[in-house]
Image (tube, rainbow, N blue to C red):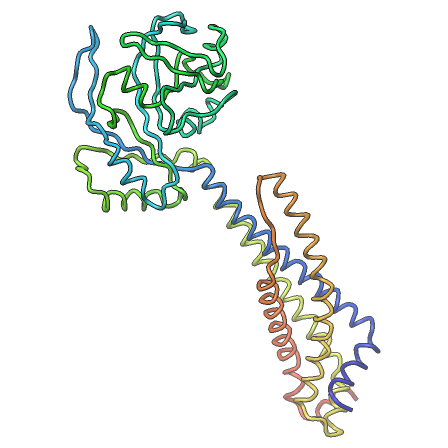
Length: 401
């Protein structure tokens, strides 16, 4: 009787033992498949969250001199040129930048909510990347943000718009010098945070016109946002090394406040998830080895008889392996659709919890996992069979007598 026939007859005759082994294989396979899918999704979610939260560094010119404006003294800083900004923004690890500079402007055709004759204008390359918006202190309620292509555009507070009966498309006029801007957006501030509702966000062309300063130079700060916050320090070192600026005239300052608030939680979640998976897989392997050992060592008499009638030890081991592999293959066929359905449900749950998360089951990962499981089963069979097959047939039969 050949190996395949003996294996088939044993599995069909010992239905209870075969079913127990099948269920064990199914549970282990499902657990491993879903665990690694969730781990992959969690890592992807952490990466997405790092990119969303963001970290940045700020380029500033060092103090240059004091100038007088009426009775006030104004600190002048070494200006930053557009060329310098473009050199740094060209780094592939930087996803966005925003140059910001502020000044005071006098109202002509409107009234500031505070009742003061003048208020702050904040010029931005892209107002969406202004700190007040990225931190959630301000939100855009209507219209759109200022972009680099805008000329004489403005975002105003809800209070200023209501005070003056303004809406999207309305115009504001400043004086000394005279400059007119068009409202393209209205922002609102977080009630729990203090923010000056007099502040008007504009483009840099408006700033240069109001301050009568040289176009293409920036006297404030430039924030550069990196793709991966974990590489912020590395990117800053690379910028200093590769960018031909007179660095003694400028400062670079890292800002990781938002990322630092979640980095510890992200790393903790990653470590705990990995630890739980490794621990559970280790326990599964131990249980699998024990089950296989009990299954094979309970057949000592059968092995002795087969050896006594001249069946080679290699053929008997092959029979055990074929028996187990046949059950394992059935478990794989059953587990694949169940794993896919479970992964999709878990993916939907994670998307509701943390946003866009994709839990997938690529074929190459499944094949790799199934191959490793088959190897573990083969090793388990060999380990379980070793104590039996180092004995002679007479020794086995004498033990059973």
